[in-house]
Amino acid sequence: MDQFGMQEALKTLGLAEINKGCSTGNNWLGSTSNLIESYSPVDGKLIGKVAVSTKEDYEAAIAEGQKAYKTWRVMPAPLRGEIVRQFGNKLRDYKEPLGKLVSYEMGKSYQEGLGEVQEMIDICDFAVGLSRQLNGMTMHSERPGHRMYDQYHPLGVVGIISAFNFPVAVWAWNTALAWICGNVCIWKPSEKAPMCGVACQNIMAEVLKENDLPEGICALVNGDYKVGEWMTNDKRVPLISATGSTRMGRIVGATVAERFGKSILELGGNNAIIVTPDADLEMTIIGAVFGAVGTAGQRCTSTRRLIIHESIYEMVKEKLAAAYKQLSIGNPLDENNHVGPLIDTDAVAMYNAALTRVVEEGGSIIVEGGVLEGQGYESGCYVKPAIAEAKNNFAIVQHETFAPILYLLKYSDLDEAIDMQNDVPQGLSSAIMTTNLREAERFLSHAGSDCGIANVNIGTSGAEIGGAFGGEKETGGGRESGSDAWKGYMRRQTNTINYSTELPLAQGIKFEL
Image 1 (cartoon, rainbow, N blue to C red):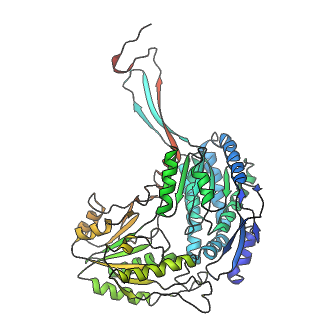
Image 2 (cartoon, helix red, strand yellow):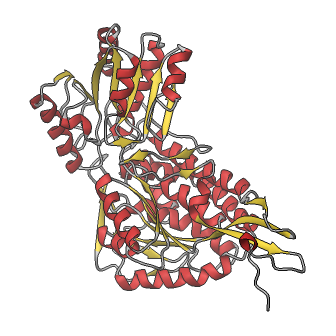
Image 3 (cartoon, rainbow, N blue to C red):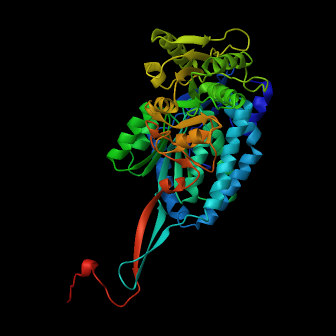
C-alpha cells in the first residue's frame, strides 16, 4: 500500500485506520464498534475500516436533513449553485488523491480513477449553469383574464444508493443536481468501497463549514443492504436514486412504489456493438476492446456482445484476438497496465462460472480466460479478459456478467442484427460501427436500438455529462446527469392566476349567489 503514494493520499483525504461511518456534514455520529473492513482488490491489503451506521445514526441524519431542507430550499437556486461550484473546485484540489483512492479501493486504472473524479467536476460545472435554468413553461388559459404556468419545486430529502464500480461519480451526478434543485441528500455508498464515501464527505464538509451552512445538507450512512432498506421504506425520503443490479432494482422499485415514492433506477446493461461490412475496423477494434476490458468489464456500459456481419466475422475475430494478446494485466496504479482486478473473489467466481456455462451451452472459447496467480496477483482478483463465440439465445449471454468476457455473435442482415441487439432483458447502451448513413440512421430510428443510449462509430462504454444517462427495460428507466434529468429530482406544479374581477367556471357553468 505504500506504493504509488497511497499512504499520503489517504492522509490528504482525512482518512484514518478506523473511520466513523455516519455524518450529517461536519458532525460524525455513532461508535466504531461494528466495522466494515475495506480490502483492496489491487494487493489484498487492508485500506481501512469504516463504522456501520446504526438505526439511531440514520434517524439522526434524517432529522438533520429535514431541518436543513427548510433553510436550503428557500436559498435562491444560483446561491445553491455557488455552493456546488465551490465543491467542484475542492474536487479539483483533491483530484489526484481521490483518483488514487478510487483506483486502489475499486481496482480501476489510475487514469480511470482520475477520469471518475473529473466526471464529478464536470457535473458540478453543469449544475452551476443549470441553477439559473430551472425553467417551467407558461400557457394561455382558456379562461379570460387568467394566465397559467408550471413550475418545479424540490422534493425534500433525496436518498442515494450507489454501486462499487463508480464509487464517487454516481453520487456526484445525483447530489449536484439534487442540491441545485433545493433538495438535501443522504448517501449510502457501496459497502465494497466505504472509504471513498468517507473521503467525499470530508471534501464536501470543508465547503459546508466555509459557508457556515447547517448540518444535514449532505449526509452519509454506511452499511449493508439493511441501511438501504431503511431508506427505501422511509416516507421521509420522497426520492430514492439507486444504482446497482437488476435484482436490487426490483426490490427498491417495488418498495418505493408501494409507498408512492419516486425512484430513479440505474441498473444492469448487456450492451452490444453491431459491426457492419462498412465499419472502420481500426475504430471498431479500439472501441470493442476498451469497452470490453476497461474497468475489468465492471461498467454497466461495458461491451458484452459484438454482433458481427458474417462477411467480416473471421477478420474481426482474428484482429480482436491479436489485440487481446497486447493487453497488460496488473496493478491499476501502474499506468503501463491496461486491466486491473475484479472487485473481489466473489466476482472472480462469477467470471469462472460464466466461462464454464458458455461452453456448456455450446459456445467456444476464442481467447482463453483464467485467474492469474503469483507475484503482483496476491489478491486473487486478477483475471484474463476472455472472448467466446456464442449465440444470442444462450442463457449466459442474456445475463449480465460483471467481468471482462466478450461474446461474438454472427448476423446476415441489419434487421437481424438490430433484433439480436434488442433481444436481451437489459436496455442501457448500444452502438453501431458503420460508415453507411442509411445503416446509421436506421439504427437510431424508431425501428432501431431500444436502449437509452445509442451510438454511431463510438463504443458502448462511458457517458458524457451533457446527456441524460440511463436505459430502458430491466435497466430501470431512470435518467441521471445531463439534459433535463434534473426534473426527476423535483415535483411539478401547475399554477393558474386570475387577474380579472370575475370568476368564470369551467365549461360555462353558472353559479350565482
